[in-house]
Length: 501
Image (tube, rainbow, N blue to C red; front, side, top):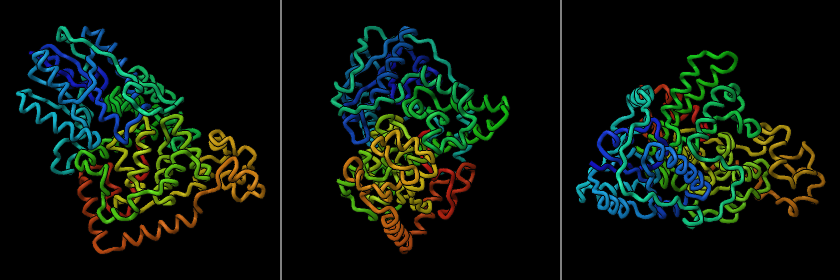
């Protein structure tokens, strides 16, 4: 039997259950589909594609050593799969389950309908602790932990389908993706992912719990594995087990707490992706219906553009947005801060700001991104709204001003005492409106106005009852990772964006 193995966001050969199943069924045709419609979406960018392309090159080299070509095709999934199945007499497709955005959800439904009509059997296997068609969250944590404790699957021996032309890996330009300079972007490929995992567990992780909050120290102290997990060059299971093996060594100092915290965040990762799996509409609809009308759907385009460009006149916010544009990454506290300011101080619709951040994050993972964007925007109804103060965040997380000055060199003449509030400097008139913009909002006034609107909405009839229902539907009595979030009045450890790990 000839079997088509459909690679999606699982660009590796190790711990790849779908690959192992396909190899046991017959000759394998490994395929990656480049879908122009997916990459034309509002959450896709050239920086993400470049990471994928590098990972595909690495995957292609690994498959070549196993005697199988990686077949890359550009086009609509149904059309390409139909053509390949006809050309190579394939009656079975194997892939991993994917919890992607609404576009991939709709595409998979189309592929399933085509496969049924064409007499092609499509088998999808889980590659993480996320459970498809989950009836209840009760017991989910045990299922997730059981999967993570399962044996890692080594690369199998392959018999390749003969006569397949590999095809080129297209460039971002060939896909007509907008120019997206990201000079400090992380590079793709499993080898780089393994290097990061090793350096994190052996050298970098000890200060993880305290250092991950600041942009000054988070760049090194965080694992930086998030793009490799998002695109599947590493499996979550192998990261969980590698971390467990390091814990078993019982390293001294701060290592124990750091590794425990990291394991917890890995569990939260599956938890949030499960939320999107259970409710795909989170990408477009407020989790709490009562929050749907909080903000106008048509965002103020001037404010949105200033926020995107790092030109709001709020130094720490602007430095974070410029850093993100140049690196494709932010540490967790800065992700929370830039989202909160966009949604509360600037009163932008979370879908508009969320889409921009999705494009900017090389590690964009829909199942993490959209639930967390909603949480920071106050539309989940679960957590008490947290309106981050960008001035205080700058003073607390960048006390020396090193980060702010690096990304806002135009503020070089501003004394340290006024760096996060340059409008209070006696000589600000020489700078503001010329080299650096005046603030587009008053921080205190904007926060107060947002707080009044949000809390008034939470007082409306039925809001608390709906929030309690949401908490119940997204929690599990057997889930130790969710125990602090059983009540909408209590804030769980997830109240910061956890995508970065």
